Image (cartoon, rainbow, N blue to C red):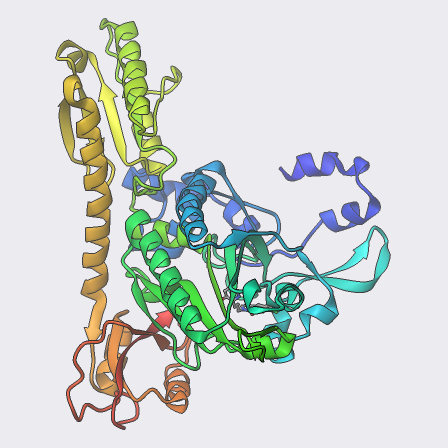
Length: 533
Ligand code: 86X
């Protein structure tokens, strides 16, 4: 690829040519991964007989990098932390987008689009909130060879871009509520280990920004949106999540309170924030003067929310369900739900088999099932099996001479390898049933694994032990900021510090006299703790 780029260099302006030789390349970027296929890796591959050179349990990080590439979700790019989203990944994004977009439209949220570029003045309008993030802001400083008079930032999030216009557009109570959403990319120049989908320097998300006359309306919406996020994870991606509230230390500092859905990756023992729904209170209304005249003719400030989920969802899905054969896609989000593969045999009726495959796809497609046949003649059935297993297609249908003779097909589940012979008479209903079973089983297995990692602790010693065992820790807490800072300080190390993940809305009983695991003071709630992404 590099050569191709270079050969084009004579058509490019000097700026590009100068910069093409060696951009920034950090560990974990494209360069490193291109080293794939190296001697050592290949050996492992041969030994295990798998399409992957690393196993999920033995080297999770390398397994993940390999599975997103070999599963054709991601292609590495020559800028560290930036990744190409291939159609296989994009269609998953579109499937959850279709669900969420329809749901928020029912809530009367309107889509819009604000510019990617932010002037320095606007970006810094809200200094306190920006300050800690400043190192992550990426800037455009040139056009062609000349320096811009004023550098321009790329949006890391759009509060400061949008809220000046909320101030302009909201005058009276009839202008409320104002509920806008945008589907867009954002740029955050992260420095800690970039990971496809999970932590990338550019990512796709939706950001919703709403303004209400009353706090009650805002509070209600925060939870409605959070429920949609839960459904994306649990019903679409088949990933169990916990709904809860963030601690004062972990909440969005610019807001009043933050709610989130939290997922867990058993292999690394890390929690991961799946999506957030914030009540911003009136903080931004004050700063941006977002006022309205209420029914009594008095000037009041709006109550605001903001909420987002990103392409990180896809990374969590890969980490939770993927196995040593590759991706495992939940049927509800998979671009392809069924792959039909002909299994011709020497002197058998090859044309008949191919026709049966095409007919099977036609019947399934008519029934609204996403199905295709792999009729390529230059690959063996075995090779095709591995290939579609790597890509995670939920159900494989094989059609060979025996199936043709018996007017049946053989279905093989990606999640558990189970094989079933299906009479063609019941094809659609059986396949539908199996896809539902796969969807449910993926969730059940993921929940079982997640739950097996939960450890309830009461004391600091138990906490440290559980942390060492990569557990998702539920502990009674006094809910004091200083105590959380202390927990972070006392657990600092190579693996990263432990922090609170969320205080679940569903609280187990807290017996009178229960003490905080970290401070010994009276506990006021149960909170999840652990290392996190
Ligand atoms: C926080 C807050 C909020 C709208 C959401 O979580 C939902 C959607 N935004 C985002 N955040 C920043 O404010 C931020 C700001 C800058 Cl300047 C930055 F470089 C990175 C940031 N990351 C997160």
